[in-house]
Image (cartoon, rainbow, N blue to C red; front, side):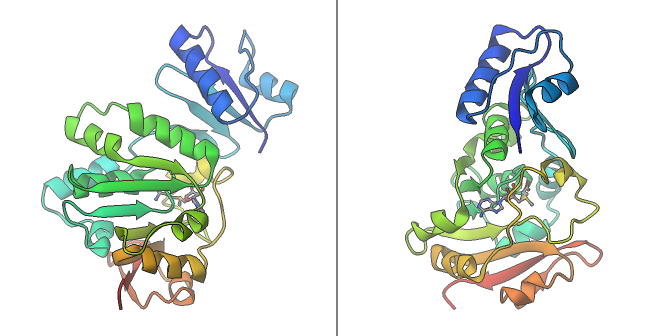
Length: 261
Ligand SMILES: C[S@@+](CC[C@H](N)C(=O)[O-])C[C@H]1O[C@@H](n2cnc3c(N)ncnc32)[C@H](O)[C@@H]1O
């Protein structure tokens, strides 16, 4: 990936600050927008990805489309939880108020937001993300996105974002330090329905979860390790997840390993 950072046309001082701060954090060149189109800026700087600082927050233009922080399905899933309806991920995690979750694959943080809402104020959600650009955009959104709903915004603000590779991070955590450790890797075969992930496919870390990461997660988890994968995926068997749950008609399933067994 060859990234440049710029602004919308006629940026406000806050937008210009946002661009400079992100360019520094991502060690990417900041390019004055002037009157140029994004296409001509990319051609001039030989870039394939451009981050545009904007009033509503940064927008990344990739080959797969535009990527910016949004709640995706999190809001609907939170509404369902509030209505007393089950959420397959929360059930697979066995997550209740006050518990802690280590989300090893934060991505757009849709799952982390739902987990943070379910764990509540007394709970804790830490999200790890290997891609510096995804960690920056998701971190920006979780810190500042305003949904207009105080309980949803509070769930966003409680998530701690850490730019890290889960393999290295797990190795340094004490035993039984999180109730649940969660993995949602990039699917080996992309699920058509998860179109919200399309724009980040070129930015995301594509590596599969290894057996050593599962072993480390089992040491770090007090209760469960959960793996999200496409229904029927061979990853469940390869990684030893004998229990697999999910909706009857859902294209996504969850593998569960009980810790301490
Ligand atoms: C499928 S997405 C996760 C989507 C997320 N569950 C959500 O709800 O938005 C997988 C993410 O995990 C990240 N990732 C993959 N391998 C990783 C690793 N070893 N350490 C940390 N993050 C990793 C990818 O960069 C990508 O952003």
